[in-house]
Amino acid sequence: MRVVKMNGGLKFSSLSDQVYAYLRRQMNQGDLLPGSTINIGEIAKQLGISKTPLRDALIHLELEGFVTIIPRRGVRVNQLKFEDVKNAYDAVGLVESFIILECIDKITSTHIKKLESLNDKMIADIHSNNFSQLFKTNLEFHNVYLNVSDNELLKKFVFPIKHRLYDFPRKNYIAEWELRNSEEHRLFIDYLKAGDAFQASRILKDTHWSFEYQKDFIYNFYGVK
Image 1 (cartoon, rainbow, N blue to C red):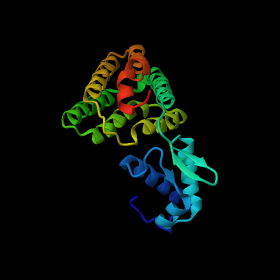
Image 2 (cartoon, rainbow, N blue to C red):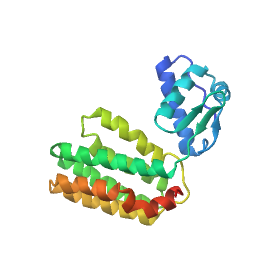
Image 3 (cartoon, rainbow, N blue to C red):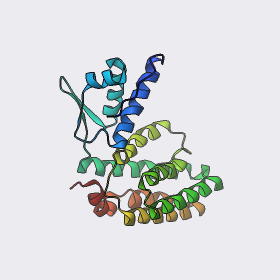
Image 4 (cartoon, helix red, strand yellow):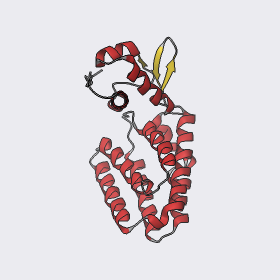
């Protein structure tokens, strides 16, 4: 594991946030793999911090489903299971479709142009096999309209779910699936242009985030059954 020294002069809450972000990066970079164990004492020593902010960061990660804290044994990095992926797709689809129905009047031509630009960038990322950047662009695409909502509770609920789906690096990227996702984005944008909130929300819930519709690709990508 790559070691990063923390600034001992930071406030407690800020230090805990930094440890949380550090552990998330370790997962994203493949240094903390699903199924591996985190030793609290060892990590605290490596980072040059006390166990308290590390425990706080791990509690945060456990609440979001990234890890499981096992008393007297350490912390296990969770593996994505079939039920996790299915539940995540169902939850994100419901939240995103609801936000579109509630906020369609707040979506402006500026938002639509941003969505078009990001979708074009995603297609370019696919063709250049830049899948690491693709997933960042994909999250940014969805955040364009999610951030239109003033419902902070819904956004705090859905963002960690998406990161759980995307944060661990994978080798089995499927260009065909990503191109189909981009086509779904294009149809979604067309409905937004037409001011058709129902159809825009429907394509999110019943197609883009539908586990049943996407399941063949999901099985291949996540390796779940």
